[in-house]
Image 1: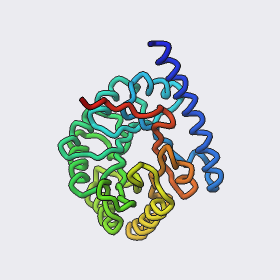
Image 2: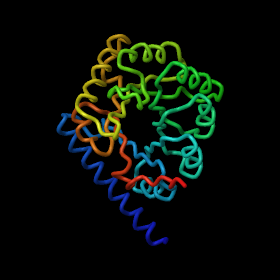
Image 3: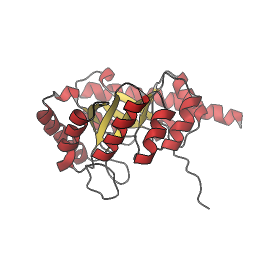
Image 4: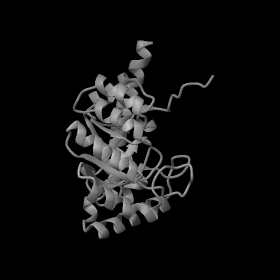
Length: 245
């Protein structure tokens, strides 16, 4: 059993190196340096031992979708990890997330004023430095997807920037289609939203990140302007969800 786990770990470290190489090539095709692209290794459903192997390969940015998972894993791993929370965040889980993960670097899934206000209030009460956040945008129009609709993006970005002093607005995020792939239209929609937000806030597009692209489409996303890609199964292998009885 231990041999099998070690073999899997080695595969993940090699897969990380392959992803980083692909990121570099995609960045070059878009006229940028690889250092301008953040790779978040999405480790949901994966054990701490596997995350540790990718950490030992030199990676420091990891993402989780569920509060329960991230608060269980983070204390078992080195403090210099930069954790990204990328799943839907419920108001009653905000305090648990912030107190349970002191090295939480970013919440990528702010999709309404209520959750922004909750984060702002709890960041202040825990005495931590302002928390970086992205506004999640529903670019596919699917009702099953979380995220603010494109017409509401500017208003929400303004609220975070101007009314939430304990949050740092850093940009926009999208998940894409129902099967977690995206189309150029999804990416174009997010880029259009960024232009509108930057105009309204009086900031440059370089000051507004685009988090788009996952395992199946991160190279295309980078070529279309992404600064933050969330890669899970390509690094860690297929998800392992508990079987329903």
